Image (cartoon, rainbow, N blue to C red):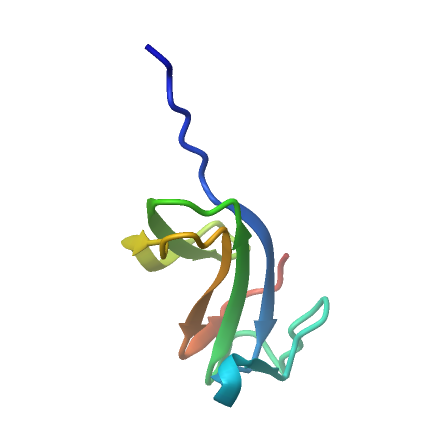
Length: 110
């Protein structure tokens, strides 16, 4: 009997931006792309929206997807918890967009 190994999707990268828009012709536009830092005038501060554009490869099958934000003090906020994701037949890579609105900045950190 041959053992079948199920590989989890591989996280390639995540980009943070102000907005993600689906354009005509299947294009995706990322507006207000953040570089290394999100700069706010003071802490705490609430941004109206922060979007996370996440790219995965090695996708095949059905998976549970979760997305959490962890504060510098270790507090965890689950934005998405155990969501069933069915990968379309034949797809081997794709994106998963998460919108956090509002996005609360409660402290400085990485």
